[in-house]
Image (tube, rainbow, N blue to C red; front, side, top):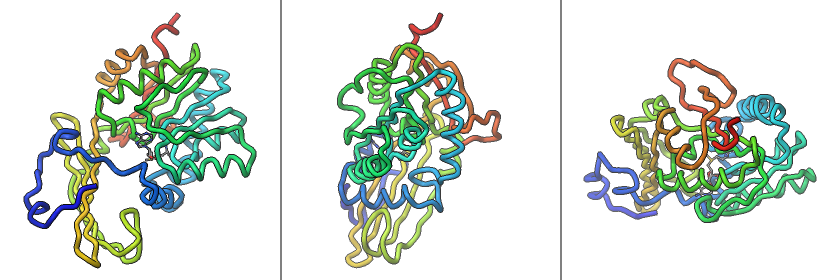
Length: 289
Ligand SMILES: C[S@@+](CC[C@H](N)C(=O)[O-])C[C@H]1O[C@@H](n2cnc3c(N)ncnc32)[C@H](O)[C@@H]1O
């Protein structure tokens, strides 16, 4: 995470090209950042890092009733699983679950919950881009717009690993940000943290800027964090690539996957006015009768 000075902040690029002008991502793998992010995941009062318990329950019900039970699924993989809220719940429902995430504190929490409840769920701390996922999954879940936070080439790599890991008839359930998400988030806000928050264990002022490039359907989210004790400015950023159902279909096709269903939310809703998310379910091209 870069440290910048005031002139650099004032003269920042207001039309940055994702992954070209912006090279840093959230430090998901960092021990201290991941501990703070875990607190956000587990805070039931908001939907920021993980969904609130009631939204999550509705989403897991839909996944279970619509895709797992009808497909007689047994083994499920959750990509970027965070603290295992989805994978552990699926394990409680009788599935064998596996979760991958790069964040150490999230994986530790997921493992701890699984071990306390003797759940058939295992976790691995890893970067999704590094190697394949093995084989034998009936369903893979990749939710909450995280697929959008990878540059296209990396998403192709991840989806290729997914295709290699799926059993015959297995599905990948992808929850992507829709254009509505970027439109709603575009703009600037700032807030003061008087005690501790996601970006530090001390008071800070956070300036959030979300730049949406509608013609390219891409976005960059910045958090300029000014530590109140020494006025040091830290820059956190996250790039997003948006997709339409047509161009995510093209990407999945390159990876040997084919869309079999689409809807507006992970609870199965369709035709929302301006949905934040788009859900795409795909299976292996060779599975088509
Ligand atoms: C918004 S959270 C969603 C967590 C979880 N899926 C949920 O709904 O509760 C995004 C997660 O993606 C993980 N992540 C980001 N980049 C990753 C990467 N390259 N490899 C593995 N995990 C990654 C983060 O550590 C974080 O836990």
